[in-house]
Amino acid sequence: MPSSRILIVEDEESLARMIAEALSRQGYECGLAFDGDAALNAVSELSPDLVILDVMLPRLDGFEVARRIKSGRESRAIPIIMLTARDAEEDVLAGFEAGASDYVRKPFSIAELSARVRSVLNRSGVPAENGKSFEAGGLTIDARREEAYKDGRLLDLSATEYRLLEALAVRAGHIVTRGELLRRVWGMQAGDTRTLDVHVFRLRRKIEDDPDAPKLLHTVHGRGYRLADTSEGTQREGA
Image 1 (spheres, rainbow, N blue to C red):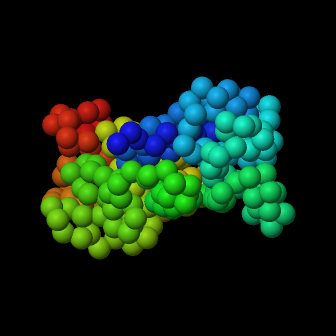
Image 2: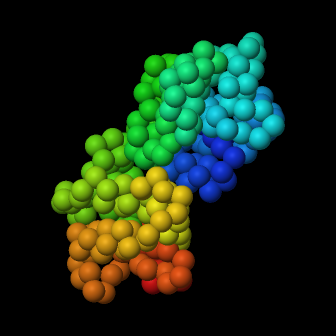
């Protein structure tokens, strides 16, 4: 069965690519656009099954992009999930009036967004992929239940520890900066990284055989952290 195609429209490129990586690991085909004009061109070229659409965009804002998608004869049936940092009731209503099927407030977890994607695709009659879990760093991540397993054993993670692990897992094999983790897990644009370090310390104690000699969760000094992609069988920078 062909993969569902998802267009991600977000002017913050690092966030757009993180969403795309996470959804690609769950079996979806993802395209990217970083402004309103590019979004409309991509809708025409890709004919996506779903659009994830940020509100605050250069050139055309998300509301206008949604209205144009919904006014097109060939695109009007495409469901839209809108992303926004705005939480005023009138903004949410404006999104639905522009044609959005769902509305996700920032900051959000990948698990939450994935669940919304599956729900919207199911409601629209597009078969969602069965990507309810994925493998990363020798661990199994169940995004639907927000649970993680090692060697078939359920890990006793707090909600914050799970979000931290998920943020690292969707980028397994790559460095995730401290700033990106603070934003993704705690919704902070900047702040004291000691909170992050404490949670990494606790997470290591739960996922590593020997937390003092970690093989899964590595510190990349001066940059951030990296969850090893154990499927590659090789060590990378910062191990």
